[in-house]
Image (cartoon, rainbow, N blue to C red; front, side, top):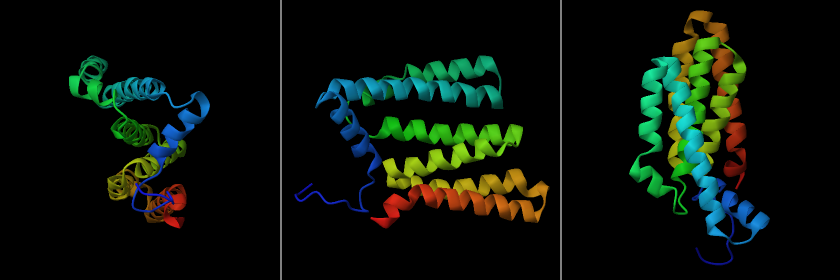
Length: 171
């Protein structure tokens, strides 16, 4: 990047902001960033366990989470300053929210999904395609509740998604 380092809509800002926040707190110490990224890796494995446990069973969930947690490629990724770990965590957070919303019907889980996936867009711009997956998923889950409820849920989801994206859109 070239000076004067102005914000641009071409590059999502959450991962650079994440690194800047850590550097502001502890100084320019890459090891601390790597430590926090490893925390996201562990949290992602736990989210994967929760998702698979809800969809299949506890035994399969434990096996999948262990394979994820011990994957050499993923363990290696988290040792470098790259955005994949934060992106994967936010994607899994959104997926967990969708799975829990499907099971419980509680709107707070849908909000977690929308906010998680909206934040994922701030890490990697390819996350914008999660909006399409969100709309399809909410439609499939909620179509039995009537057209009025479906439109309300879709409108709420899109509104929250774009509210989360608004800092990027405004830039």
